[in-house]
Image (cartoon, rainbow, N blue to C red; front, top):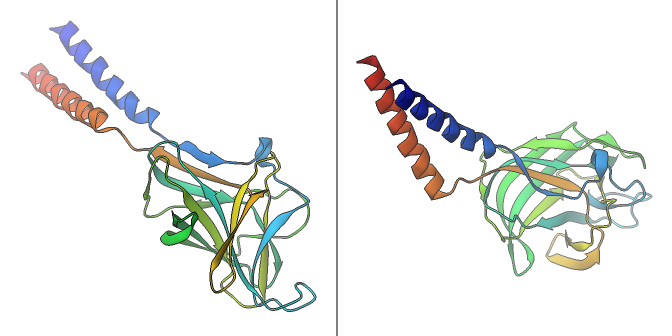
Length: 219
């Protein structure tokens, strides 16, 4: 009997180990070693910024895309941005994609007093926690968007330094436009893998069997 109990205990621990394996994973990242990014270039998001910072009053939101290779629950997003001028406020949106353009908002985030003042030096990523933990589906493109919510504000979203090339979208206040084969801004998306239905069934069966063994041990 003791051997059976030990076998049941080992199986239960194995199943709990399977849960541990599904902990946080990197869904996408174009950071270099040590979270490095470009110190010579970036894409700007701004809202009615006066000269001399920009020649005309403009409303620009900037979007970068990524595609998960598996199904994940979103945990955190990391971006590296610098405040050029204005209020230290920034909105970040996770959006779906339609016709290779940002489409619908999945989750919104607001950063307040989180950005360093822009310099062409290394800046650490800002970590943003997801509260709704939406599922990001495999082989499905998504867009990460930054937007300045207050007039007179401009920020720079630093480019990656690892040579990644891809699309970038800009909202000009009226519509999205896409530029391909450019150097995208740097960001990281972290999540937890969605368990397969079979793994969930195994876990439930294993826990039920483990509970039965515990009841037998008490008798």
